[in-house]
Image 1 (tube, rainbow, N blue to C red):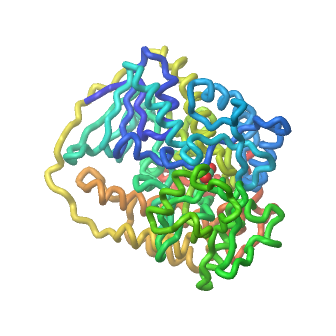
Image 2 (cartoon, rainbow, N blue to C red; image 1 turned 45 degrees about the vertical axis):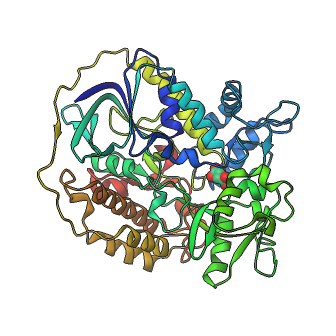
Length: 528
Ligand code: SIN
């Protein structure tokens, strides 16, 4: 039994930023499903957006964020995060050689899709996430109040029913024993759910665990229909093999067919750097018709030097950079929805917080602007730390229950294969959706009754499947309800945005309060 001031589940940028910024008199514990460096943030190639250029201004970055989010964003949140970005980045830049600089020592600013100015700060060319994570890990190493536990799979939030407060989490250790961790503040920072789909840029650990746990505990879950598909993952023999950053198109690469025809001509004014949903849908149309699409990189000088990680992914998969063409396909990349929180990360359950991709503050709206997510994680980690540093001074009763047991026997469940879940989500609830497929998928998912499975006797692999089914259900249900297309949610049977019916309306799911709450909360975001 452990009892901490702050219990953080997950180890991405938001989690580590929070831990680093908490005061040294707080006991902080980070539990993470695999290794601290297996976090999705570690893979982030694209950088961090901030209006730092001489011709740039936060107001321009705000407009780009709202435009990409198709005005579904929470405008106050957008204003606050984007305005804070330049100081936040400059502060980190002063801590060491984390970001790439020009010869004159100024930060190098790159371009990415749907940005109207060059404002993307990168580290190690295309290894921004790794650089920022390593910086935070080294900061953690200097703090004695933080314990990190790896290979601990959190699966059930513990609630104090009397106070309707989250007090901890149950987890399975590597020997599959059940261990409980208690904390005055319990923070979910487990990322999104990229692994729900066949094609994804996400780390293999990112299957929606934190969101599913919060849902089962009764937290509000919002905007699950908004899933971002990144246009360019390396695509070989029908499989995706990793991300080819948008920065490659920012440096001038274009999307072409076998015969060199540029496919984004006439589709969007920003062409290859148009919003991700527009570019992904365009590539998808070609792939569906059996045509391979490539990134033509022949006009980028010193590609290997500018993009060392991408070069190594390509060459490791038999694609030579000198050939000038990289085969690509879109894949699931980012979840705009998640656990409904305020900017501080507070969820609808006392004591339970969510930060990073697991949370939904409304910053990203219906589609995230490139390089706004590491920014959000860093901002939220810092903001929540300030609040906890203050509120933790208020004494609270500590939980004393001991809980460390080996379940007697493992239950054998009738669950589908992970691959089947992914393939059906890709086919029926992927880049292009329609009523018929969504209904088919809901019927398929409902046969498993995932919500009512008791998890203590399940193996971690089965719990992962249960969580994937729960998340799949939330996405499919929300996608069926939203009878329009907006941002990352595209319905071929409702191909246009329907501002009259849907502008600023959010779909909220609440397991404990049932569907009434879900219907009740199809309401204007402004009123919440
Ligand atoms: C990319 O490098 O294309 C991804 C950046 C992001 O998703 O923010």
